[in-house]
Image (cartoon, rainbow, N blue to C red; front, side, top):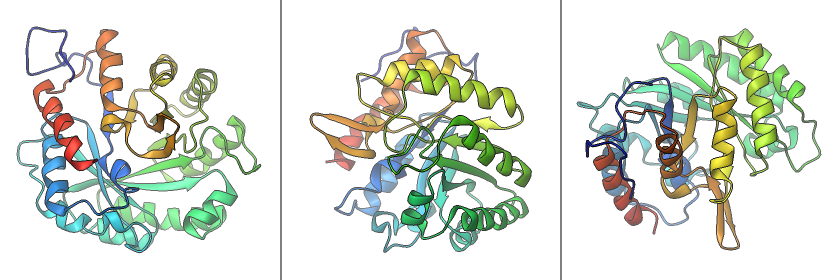
Length: 300
C-alpha cells in the first residue's frame, strides 16, 4: 500500500506541480500473459485505474489477435470504460495503418502509440518491416492521426542499446527524432526494451534530447529491477524528463530473471519517489490502493 505524506487521505499530494505526467500501462503488463484475462476483469481493473488520476492509461492495442491474443478484446473493453468522471486520457498501441484506422474510429481514445525500433534486426522481427518501411508507415499514420484530432506517441524501442550489434549511440537516436520532428510528432518515448539503461546513459540521453528538441515532449519508458528503479527515476527527472511510464507491481517488460523482475517501472515506486522528494502530484491515494489490491486478481 502507498500512504500519503499529507493530511488528506484522498490524495498523495496537492496539485501544485501538474507538469509531471504518470502514464499507467496495464496493456503492457497484460499482453505477455499466456492465460487469457477475462474481459470483465480487465474492464473492472482499468475502471479502477481511471479513478486514480493518472494523466494517461495505455489500456489496449489494435494489433493482430494472432500476434497479441491477450488484446483481442480491446474494443469490447473500451465500450465499457467509465470516463464520465475521469480526466485521464486513453492511449492505444497500433503497429500499422490498419490498426490506426481502427483506433481512430473511437472518440474516447486520445493517443495512438507506435513502436519504432532503433535496431534494424528488432524492427524486422517485431513488425516484419525495415526501419525505412516503418517510417513510411509512420508518415501515413501521423497524417491520419492529425485528421482524426488525436496525438501520436512514438516509442523508440532499444532506446538505450541493443543486443544485436546494430548501430546505437545518442547521435544515432537523435537522427530518428529529427525525422519524427519533420513529420510533426510531438511525443517521443525512448524505451528500455531489454533493461540496459543506467543512471549515466539515462541522464545523458534526456539532457541531450531536451536541449536539442525543446518542442517535443519526451517520456521515459524504463525497465528496472526493484534495486535500480529509484536511481533511474532520479537520473531521468534531474535531466528534465517529466513524463514517466509505469505499471502497477512492475509487471510486463522483460521476463523473470532469477528472483527479481526486470520489467516495467513499478508505478508505486514512481509515486513513492516523487512523494519522498516533495514533488507534488494529483493522484487519489485511496483509489490507487484499491487498484493495487485488485491487480492481484488480474496478475495471478
